[in-house]
Image (cartoon, rainbow, N blue to C red; front, side, top):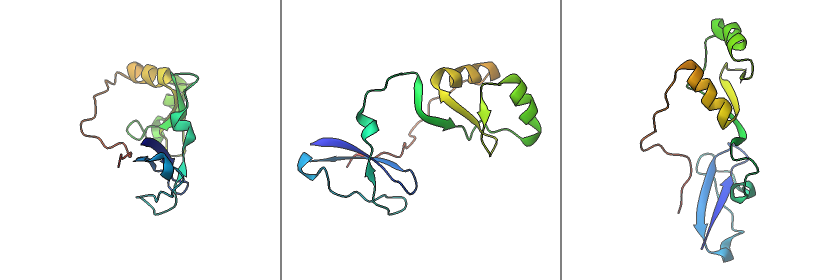
Length: 119
């Protein structure tokens, strides 16, 4: 048995499936949109830099109001904002420094579903 990581090209849902290696190429259907998922070969590769995100993090919980955009750009020039005025982080250290500078303490999420299932 092996764990295979999949990513939906339609909705970007990520999933993991445990199955025999003989079924490695069998199709997996996305539970969110019903599209056929693709193997995510990056999930099992070693990361070159452990402190970098393999894709940018757009923080919904740290979004700012439109009247705060200029102040944000002045105080945090290295943290860009997306079209919805959410901060975009490219690495762990940038994210942690931003939270610390703003006085935000992270709390662990209890029972949070990460969008991955082992079945």
